[in-house]
Image (tube, rainbow, N blue to C red):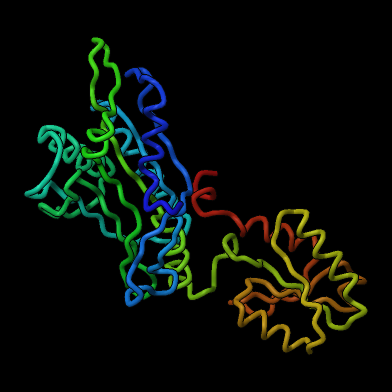
Length: 314
């Protein structure tokens, strides 16, 4: 079957046993592929597709846990956005529309919790009065790419409809059956669209840690292929993504090809390099960096190929 959403499956996991207030919060997440029959006229590359994968999660919690749970999602969101190099974004809180389902008091508590979580982190946000879904208020985060275009990214969405329709409850500390708060969250949203935004943002020139191929080794002649393979093995064992260009093209053409593919590093190897156990290094942006021992280049890659958020915490 083709599923349009992941929510009911997580709900059935929640309903698989009686729940106590002591168990909450419960968080279920998956990279789930869903399908929407979009009209052909609105389909657009990776940005608008009929089948896509979401980093989807659902949180079931008590009223007193809502602010902390929203805060955890916000913290993870901005850790990921920082890692991928997005520093500009807009945040909106969408409130209760005229036609809505659910308890008005729960709506008010949920909306206040969204605001409080954002204010605790000193994040600027706008209010979209009446712009929430009929089933709950939400936070929307749009990221801005290098060309100044805004793209829908993170959504943190309360849902007062599905818990009621599926009769979701937990037992509180007085033994009463109470409806939990349910929060949908997708940080990257559509993974396909996020990759499309990354391509646009970096124009294909990904930072080293994110580049599919981090270095390409270019042997000057066929007799240097064996040494090129040795260098590849050394770097690959250290965890780097390295390829050897073994085609019969001229060296300058191979360098040009790697440059066009926006590979961060090009390593030229010939007789001198094989004898000295070195590589002649060329950087995508900095140009010719000259000869470098393989061990030194491996160390350089290790220092440079660090995810920014991880670098900030070390």
